[in-house]
Amino acid sequence: MTHSDVGLEPVKRALEKSELEAILASGIFDRAPNLEHLLTYVCGKYFAGATNEIKEYSIAVDALGRPPDFDQKRDSIVRVEAHRLRKRLRDYYEGEGALHSIRIEIPPGQYAPRFVMQVAPPAPLEAAAVSESTEAALPEPMPEVVEAAPPALVARRSGSHRTLLIGIAVAILLSTSAAAIYYAGPGVSVRQPGPVSMPGVTASGKDQVFLLAGLESGQYADRSGRVWESDRYFQGGSVFDSGDRPILGTREPRIFQTRREGDFSYDIPLAPGVYELRLYFAETLYGENNAAGGGETARLFNVFINGTRVLHDLDVIGEVGASAADIRAFKDIVPAADGKLHLRFEKDTNPAFINAIEITPGTYGKLRPVRIVSRDHAYTDSQGRTWQPDRYVQGGQLVVRTQPVATNGDGELFHGERFGNLRYVIPVPPGRYGVTLYFAEAWFGPGTPAGGGVGSRTFDVLANGLLLRRAYDVFKEAGGNHRAVSFTSHGLEPDAQGKLEISLHPVRNYACVNAIEVVDESSSEVPQS
Image (cartoon, rainbow, N blue to C red):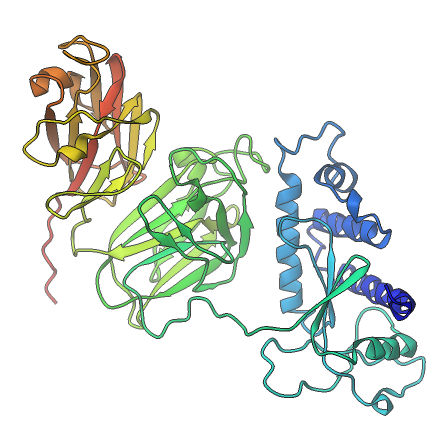
């Protein structure tokens, strides 16, 4: 640190402390005492030069009142409150604090505060020549896109008085650059402002959307090769990240680990046409073993599509439990007259939320077939049909079978298998569906590791509790091992939560399945205008 830096350090600290005082006096924490305690604690450590002591455990015990036996692996209170604090600060600086020259940030993944100042070159000193009893002129925030000389300093008021001495010192300190200066501990680093990024602004509507709510940047490619984009097209709400949280009932937990929460809406531009919509939910705040506790009715909310309420008092815990995947599917979705799909989420007992939004081309009157293959990656058969990698499943495990399978169709469809006590929960809209299950016995029978034959493996097959097959024997039905066999059940209806649950319960040895196909058997007549 240079001699001049040492001399200006008290000035920087005075500004930083003044900004903290202004935030605490603003009232933004009137109904959020935990956030006030958290901010006061971490800033106090920062001012004391003890940022190395800002740890999750110390915050929990010293700032949030957790007991000394606090276990951060079991209690996520600090991560939850830190995320809320980041959002509260962001909202403050977008509103009441928009004209503040210095801002407090808590960087994601950290708890130590950072003091950020965006400035313009100082105005002539005579413009700020005021008495010591007058609040000093301070620099205004610099616009992110700089195409011309930035404006001169503009005086602003705050909750605390700043003397002329501080104002002049800051002007001297900042007069050499119009860059944004980040105060991060004792050192000062400088970066030039870059252009504003406007994610999601498109010249025309899309024909498919894969969107991760709450994901502020980046993308995610799932097992099907679909690329999920960061959050966009929204108005309102807050973002939360549950971290690397396990999610039951999905092989794609990443889709459920960020969320938008509050009263919010999405206006998604779409090309003209008919679409299918899937909304993804997983309750990671309320419920057993989650930070907020509670259970059924802890969070109820409503969902609207183009102004029509389609989900009334949705209770994710009531449908699937805590930290579990809940997907709702809709067909015959069309954009409104303005070329956008309007989704609105409104709270009932607690703020609404959404983890992900999927929009894909549809066919009027019918859900497109859902095809699932017991493999890690998608498979395209000889007819050009795409089978999605294993999904919507709970229980069992995947294995690869290399022995050729005798079949009139695609033998490769049977090279992956899931075995165990199996439960597929497939989201579908109301209607009637045909379900086809595909099998090939690869473990029992002549020449196999386990030997045996008829009766070696039997299991019951149910759909939403309705028995479809009792003690189903793949070897017997196929006439031997390594032979393809299937059966179809028609007219099956989803439950009240929009789920078609296919269960394979072991009777003797584990159940198994190679592929599942769900076909909408509803009428597809297009209504006459």
